[in-house]
View 1 (cartoon, rainbow, N blue to C red):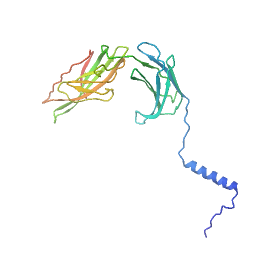
View 2: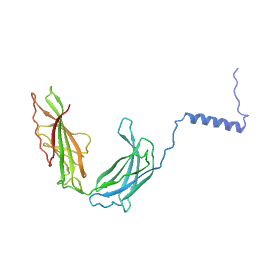
View 3: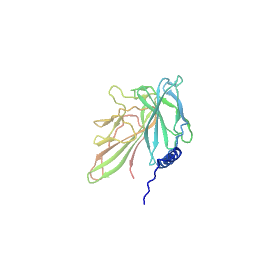
View 4: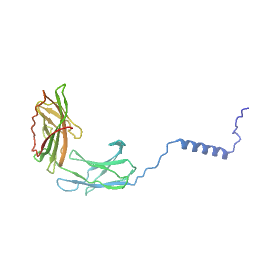
Length: 262
């Protein structure tokens, strides 16, 4: 015989206890979460590397990223901004210090973006990230190639094509960032006249590259400093067991290497 439980005569105390028990069951089924620690702090100074003076009144942005288990980072939609003081200082407080989170601080000066690189605060919640920015110039007299390497990446005997990776390492020995001039171009990359399927490789910001004749033009700025790597890929035709490779450089070059990929 089935019996229906009648709760009409239950007291308010019993009904309250029943509600609390039900709430406990629902809470146990929900995902467990831990409140984040928000005692992180990133501060620093923005300095004009050309004049050596602090930069005041500039907008500094801190962006948060989540480190992926397989490597690399994934941006999160958390961006905070601050204005540099008269002595060029900025600070961000109350940042999440959870493991796996990293931050990057950036500022734009005279149209060029500068960044601190990745900053981790999970193990040490207070970090300093100073940023140097530079005045700009279209003059490329301080630009040179510290090295250029030609790598024979692959050979397709059926199609008679040799795949080449051309690696450039640019130096900007000046104290200003090189930007595009009246023609809208910055760096020049000469490739062999018979090169086909010419294209930039990952790892360097070419901006909006263009190929005219046997020269690739970039539109991105070149900040002061040494060893700014950039690489191009292209295909050269060959017949028999040889192919013709002729290259020129548009900048003073210290070392030029040829290497076969093993």
